[in-house]
Length: 156
Length: 127
Image 1 (cartoon, rainbow over the protein chains, first blue to last red):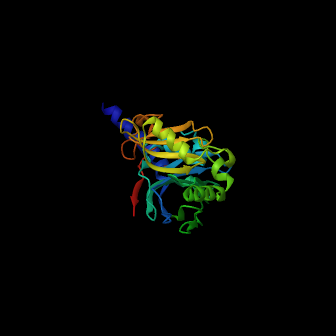
Image 2: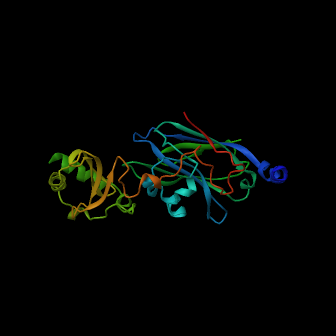
Image 3: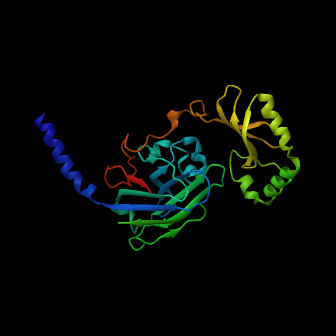
């Protein structure tokens, strides 16, 4: 038992540098007052060759609506495992969604792009509302959305 | 009649992309549309109570209750009046099941997709 513990301590210590290579980032998405139901929002990342890497957050819990987040859906085939543990409520018109997370350091200044797809019931789907390169220069600079999102900012 | 005309005008003004944008939408040329009265007749024939009737994704869409009183949302092909999609709002008897929904944040760890620097789940506030 003791040796198991020390192994655990050792392995944890060894993986720590990897884990420490993260920075706390706050992603703020301000919605317009578009006059409709709560918006489903998919936040996900693609790499330099525009290949889907993974999801950061899914606002909206019912998977039957995910097909309306067309960019995310195409990239993932609607695989809900992609957003297990990172799913919350949809976001009302005029509200602001603030996500604070530890983002891997390697994502910055390396050609990665953060995308947001948006969809609102009975209104037009809006994939790629926001598409913003993850760079240290871009920190704190609001990016304008197209249909439902007023603006998006990442801060650290 | 005036309402139908208004609806048709609005529909005609919408860009074609709206109609074609969605996989489960309808893409029927306007001149093949049956009048809304015919769609409402379908509802009546099925014993549905109509709470809301509109056009969505190029389909007629009826929200209301079925004969058993369950909340429904039905899309009809505007030409054939066939059911394109039928959702039960109580969710349990949907195409999928509630089990298809992803696990909410906090109940399981975030996916190991390399994006999260640590296994810490994101903290979220809606203001």
